[in-house]
Length: 363
Image (cartoon, rainbow, N blue to C red; front, side, top):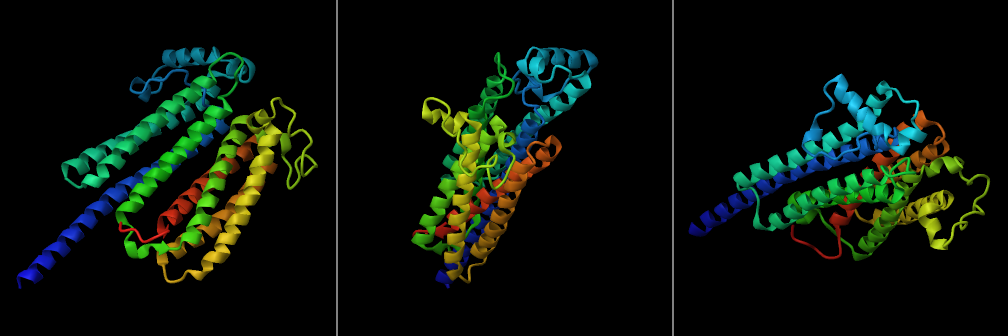
């Protein structure tokens, strides 16, 4: 009788612990959704050329936009000092400035809201004693990554506020983009670790290795996507499947030293971006064919199906984005959609990497 009671108490405690972990995971997943929206807002900000409209970093005071005509004029005058205004937007009216100001302000405001959601949730779960000891270190890392992301964002903006620069630097923009995706994946992985059960895992070292290779290629692809965006490299070759009439352009190595072409030659950047897309597609097809052998795991099958659909959508959007890159109105919608699907693809791949294991892991 005593043994049965003890087992019942243990089972009740396990259920309570899982419920607490699931609540924390839901909070983290809300954060994941907010990060996705933040990255999309960043894409809109870039495509509308809004990123340099706010020339100061005021984490607290900057939460409010200009509230009267004098304040708006003051902000506009500060923007007029940038080379972007002098050489690109010199015909901007105050109304035009308000439009680009809104997107940069909203992008920053959403970041503030994210910080608040994470902070309030942290305090709440801490007060309710929902956190287990093993959650504390990942939580500290999470807040550290969020803070670093804000700092990188300001460094990116500053890169475009120097003489003879009309936009933020492509290296800084790519760093900001990739660090945001790193934060996204870390938060998602943390959430998965709290509610995915051991029986939902798939043990297959070979599939895990191939998925890791796919992830490595996808990360490179995303890096070159950031460089493409920062350099506006799509417009230099808005053709497909060729690149301005050639499959291998002749000016891939026109910069000296040769390695400089990999980050500063728009044609080379687009060529590499396309090549990585083809490699990613081939590896994904190989993995999808091989992974058909796995049956009976609902979570894995859902992730696998999502991966298939997203790969197809991303290829189609990539082609459409390139060939429409010379049309600014189309590019905004296609570019943001391309970025959104890329994030979903990365998240599904992160989920697959969590579920597919080299050996069984107790979660």
